[in-house]
Length: 153
Image (tube, rainbow, N blue to C red; front, side, top):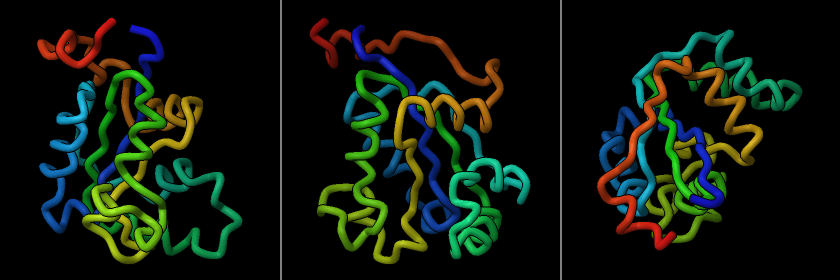
């Protein structure tokens, strides 16, 4: 399959606490993406500092790390054609106020500090994030029965 790739999607503590895990998984499945890894984890401060290293100099960094460590995160790896780009479209803009209705953030979030989910912004960052959150043995390789119904070639 051309352009098949993996992306890292995390449902943040607010999304987990609000019971949105099933709805968010459902959106990715209905789009035709394949779930290849999933776990519920409360991340350490050190782990989150690595994940958000590119934001370390931002004034909101400390608060972001504290919030992300405040409860469980549903960490996932999704696979499919253009998974990174399309995953970002499904999530909507980082600021929910700028997210279109029909996107996850447009439907479920109001405040940028509680925007429900995280998605990789590029193939390279997806690879780094997946390696940070998952061991290779935790990522499943399988063919979905719906594959030929989702992809023409």
